[in-house]
Length: 262
Image (cartoon, rainbow, N blue to C red; front, side):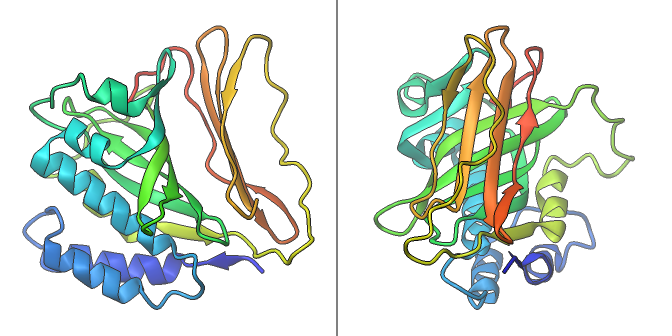
């Protein structure tokens, strides 16, 4: 059975973050984040996309308060990678050599896909860089032994072409964070009984010379893959098991000329 928590998540998150914002959008406070977590704690089943939304909020908040690369280091899994224009690189060794930029990238999730066993999740959303340019990102989250989530993969690209600038009065760098959360959608994979192997996910054949990586959830109900083609184009594909078949989840072609979110 397909389970979508978009209405519950949208109402709870939107109410918590947008209440009291008549004077303009602002970043969520610790009290608002606590309200979000309490409001969404009753979502059905062990797999709750709300946990990934809360993680994304904390991730973006740390980037604003403590520095972009400080946050990326804190939320990286030991084997986490960042998918830049020249291909994926190990996140923690690269981040250890970086200094925080004066202003961080701002972002907010739009959709979260989660495996039935909650071991793996994928978020996709929008970001804005310090110059005001916007784009899309994909992040793969893995549950750790302590129950927290850390990213295995993060990649993004700027829109090409860029959309027109926002109307006067909506240029605040946090608009993309707050307004994204009032429409966030959560999808959970169907749970599988023991002894029910799944067919292979329908990833397209790779081009000659392409590099490929990716994993699957512990129960196999969510799979993802990155590719770096020989000519430099980047791809991200993922599939979730719902309704007795593979459904396409987060997917995006970054293109050889696309700028990154980093």
